[in-house]
Amino acid sequence: MSKEERSDITSQRKMEHLMIAKDDSIDLSNSTKWFSYVRLLHNPLPDYSLDDVDTTWKFLGYELNAPLVIEGMTGGHKATMRINESLAEAAQSTRIAIGVGSQRAGLSDRSVISSYSIVRKKAADVPVIANLGISHILGEEGPDNAKKAVEMIDADALAIHLNPLQEILQPEGSTDFSNSLVSIRDVINELDVPVIVKEVGSGISYDVAVLLKEIGVSIIDVAGSGGTSWSLIEGRRSPEGSIKRKASISFADWGIPTPLAILEVSSLNLTVIGSGGVRSGLDAAKCIALGANAAGAARPFFIRAIEEGSKGVEEEIRSFIFEMKSAIFLTGSLTPDQLRLTRKYLLIDPLKSLIDERHIFI
Ligand SMILES: Cc1cc2nc3c(=O)[nH]c(=O)nc-3n(C[C@H](O)[C@H](O)[C@H](O)COP(=O)(O)O)c2cc1C
Image (tube, rainbow, N blue to C red; front, side, top):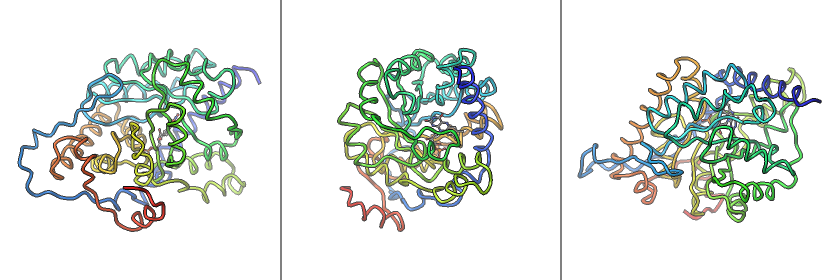
């Protein structure tokens, strides 16, 4: 297959993903709400003003308004340019971090590069995160691909997404993940920006985080289960009645629920981003109370971008920040860090039992 043919397929696939991702039925947060099993401890006597709450967050050399990330989603097809433009304008005006979607298409087709680089153009003063899948950094070309992805958008970090379930269910997926860990290490050694390792909705466990830390990863975005289901999205691309379509239903909610994934990873002294099914600023505050340094969301911002453009995304971000700030205040904390370090949360079943099963030290 020629480079051009491969790039056409990647580009076409991105459009199919976006069309399917619009459908509410692929969002598990509409059924199982993992964050409803986390309660924050109310403090009715905060001895200061709501205005004293400081949500600012220092990340990748920038001072941001809140510990919030627009998770990597798109780029790679001309039609995605408007979505990325809206997301980037909103990230810039509200001063939060933003990622682009997988840059695989941009590596092989120069004509789609602007659909990614628009993000840096419109979000000049906030962290912009490049994105490649683990399968694109394997082998000899890996470090080179990583460098190109970072340069393409003048990124402040590179997110490498781990997505074995997605690749298994993808009609044209690649399922050989041999040498993943050494390949991530090689990329870390070559790049002069940090590497963030993320999942895409199945979560990262303590054991995997330990391995990642050992090779020098300093930022983990857990992207746990309970939000966008890539199993369901990929399944829709296979014919009804096919083996992969059937498996996509079986594995729809496969993975580590986000609150558990945050607890798994946050004892390791890494920078942790809690994402996967985060649907409000209160959910985001719960991520932080559980031990994350910041929270991230993808689908809520995507939906607002396609329906209303940058104004809608900006409104969604402002709503997230308002709720996050209110929750920090109502727990008697002054900053996200204080909320994180004092761990003012209570767990309810079934999440509590799940966490007990894992014997996590919390
Ligand atoms: C429309 C859409 C496209 C996505 N594309 C990518 C991608 O290219 N690379 C990536 O690492 N994650 C991608 N993701 C996954 C998100 O970054 C995130 O990890 C996951 O959706 C869980 O967050 P959510 O439940 O808030 O949507 C995408 C998510 C959505 C909704």
